[in-house]
Length: 188
Length: 331
Image (cartoon, rainbow over the protein chains, first blue to last red):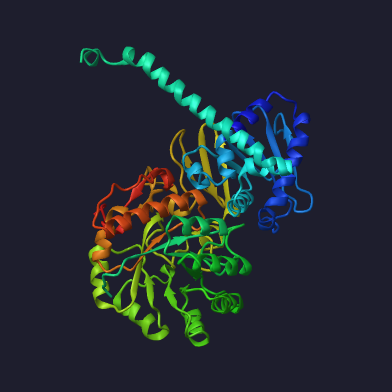
């Protein structure tokens, strides 16, 4: 997941205009690989959502019209004609999309805020929950035969990043630990 | 009925992905509903089509897991068709049991599909021997899901007097103690879990932020205001915080989830057969973690071991747990 998170953070300074091709491809992949998600929303009338990752200077407008789904990025949500807003940290939203956290639990903890048409939000949550989304696999699928080696490279990168983070934490503890101990412990 | 057989872990699924998570995490049985008014979790985007049920029946049965179909709302007056079709399709597809609450529907299932195993839903609110014997004698009910109103000694006494299996809730959301008879949601929204399969329907809920406060409204009523950092709960009227007698408080019940993972051996001693986890509306992450925790706890108990219960508080409503009526700690 660090690679996806880094990608999101790296994309933040970009103009939404430059993100559009990637977002269009991503939504196309979702539609192709997870048709059940769209099927579950078919009873709603053109559900459109404002997705607001609070730690990014961007918002996303997601329209799940079964015939013409659209995903676009904006600097802010003013003027967007959406039924509901879903607001939370980027990582929480990604975990929610991938079914790694429970939406109700995020709501109970106040990490997730929803406004507007709650029925549309519940429908989206249940539709997303009905499929097995793995963002990395989904996005890599556009590479065709290169998806497998690219996935291995990214997973290796993620593993190295995680290991580097652990090593840094260990180094931090080793260097600063003695200085942070209470005096009586230092005398042991 | 009392017996020493291993207890059955009965787990929720609102989607095929949740069903797979439940099976993978150790469910003995999964309960689910069709995508309509015939079950008590009729939420937008939730539940199974007939084709999804057929496909997932094979998946579950291939892994030794049973499927129970909840047809546990009360048929609309003059329009029993959808409920009858649900029972007919359940029989045709080969579910292991249906869970019903309405006596008319129980009668229909008994006459039309005598070999289809019938469980009595918690929505029927049968909590005494006379009532349970009536359902057994009239409709051949094999198992009763007990309302969440009984202490463990009361469940033990009940099991000594009846000849059907009992199933009890061990984790998840709680209702006020009037299951199958609660009209609070209907009073405010016109829809209730009893007939429409939905309590406090999402289409009638509104959340707004006022500074750091989260305000929840149901219909025309403000039902709660959560201060900054305060865990939130479901927007149901029974868990609203109201002003009465000059004091603001939870008049019916607090936003708290049932967790009886520490009472499994007592429930076994009381003769309980099924241990039910609430939450067909919850996500895969909830189902995987809760089911695995209870699977581990039950298996450890069967081996005669004691393990520390998993911390499930991050998944509970309001971040709080209670043992509810099982211990009646409020008395």
